[in-house]
Image (spheres, helix red, strand yellow):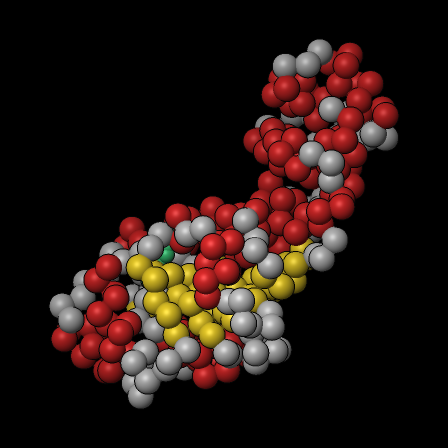
Length: 283
Ligand code: SAM
């Protein structure tokens, strides 16, 4: 079995396959040997679980997951990494590699074809930084039954995602994610833990999915529209931003906000999750 966090081994595999890093695909591979075992430990407790990994790279996290869990499905967009992954994961029969853009994978179909025999399913990934938010929202909005999502992102993105309501760091993404579950930072990872080293440090986050989300909101689309509309104009008060975005008169919005018991002069970061839910019920 390969030691995929050994820099010499990595370089020789990459050289053998003539692999060149593609910066635009967010290719920074882990070389710190303690990171992937820790991520795999934290991501799920049930060894009879199936794990979806996004962006396996050369397979350093993939192998740690395969040692611990019943099944690992890893979706990698870069065709040049597929022959490398076939070689590095050859010892494991419970790994399936899919060469595809994760945003084009039908997650419900994937669940039916790959994970039906698993007791639980979860996501574990070192995400490409250029599309972190898109991938996280795609997984949450099309969740076929993931119990949790454990992923590594840039430290700043992690702070935004985990920011509490009312803080300057909070943004549309932190509110949107709170609807699905409460994110928390598990541990930080320094930039020197990667090859090539990125310019910033990273953090590993875990989101345990709320089991009762479907009952909370009447109109999910409107709820997310309100979050985006208010946060895209976060310097305006919500009376103005809602009126502009929904093309509804201020008088009407005022009535809606009064019914929802929300102060019309508040800025988005002053609202709680329940406020957004109430507004989306009445608008
Ligand atoms: N898991 C490896 C590790 O920890 O060393 C690599 C992580 S690297 C930060 C991100 C990986 O995601 C790269 O292998 C990249 O090719 C892949 N990737 C980028 N965009 C993707 C997409 N849309 N769908 C699937 N994989 C993607």
